[in-house]
Image (cartoon, rainbow, N blue to C red; front, top):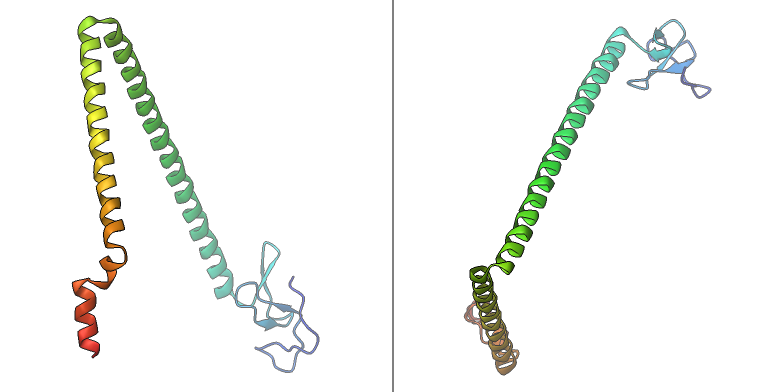
Length: 154
């Protein structure tokens, strides 16, 4: 039973001191107004029923969350298995190609193309860096948008 401060009175019986507060609405109540269920004090059958209904809804939400977490874990496990299978397949294919003369030739060509692509990306990045260095702060100062905004303010 929830303890109550001295001086509180029952809201249903203003002349009677309150002995507890409702577990749902926290309304101070006297001994005559107490409705108990499983040792919990309520001010009315409505608050008791609301507490029971809310408890059932919370249990339903928690059960749904458990199922969702379980499903998410299963999906992650399936993704991990697929990823491991792809890695193992790639490893086996690489080893098989490595031992085969035609496979060695193919691996060399793939490696060569990857290096070419890498070099192109590095060149593009270097060109971008150089362009930024050449223009400096001019990229911001000379922007068309900024000039239009400044013209509107003037």
